[in-house]
Image 1 (cartoon, helix red, strand yellow):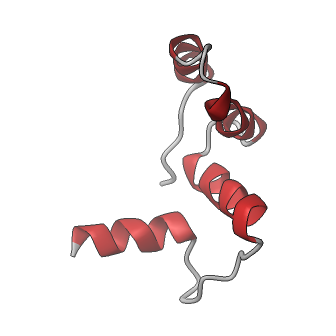
Image 2: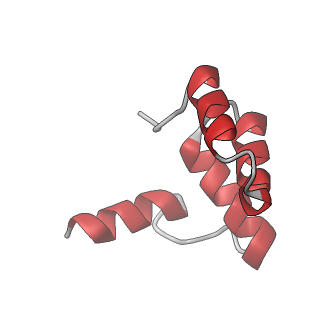
Length: 70
């Protein structure tokens, strides 16, 4: 199951961060991906670094979480 924010949760975060323009691209990406954190994380990473193939058939977010858990 992919971690996902509801539209209400996204709106709440937008209200909390409305003065922080550095967060707007991330919030916009979350909206575009219907709150799907994994897809949003991958999209933001690709925009920044241009790489989408992380190996092992997993998303970068999942590989990061797996590494943190070990």
